[in-house]
Length: 79
Image 1 (cartoon, rainbow, N blue to C red):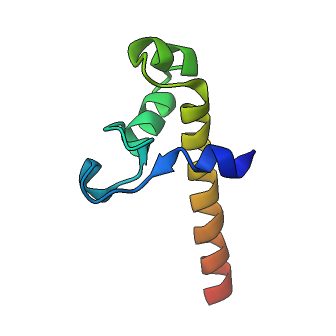
Image 2 (cartoon, rainbow, N blue to C red; image 1 turned 135 degrees about the vertical axis):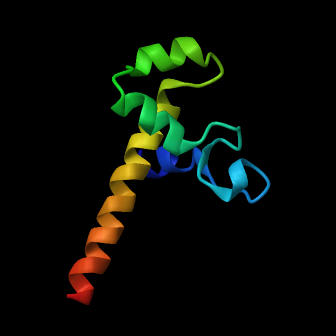
């Protein structure tokens, strides 16, 4: 399931200035995470952005976790 969720996150130099986005749409992963960190719920975001799906937002969270995991592994290896 993790890979199918992560496949929703796309990086395209022509969309979002090459930052990770959701399904090649102009929704930046960074922005969705900021909304969630600011207190919005997944349901709030689904209501605000009706073309997003619950799995898109779960993919953003998973992408953040995997990014931190990779950076942490690199820091440990470099130490």
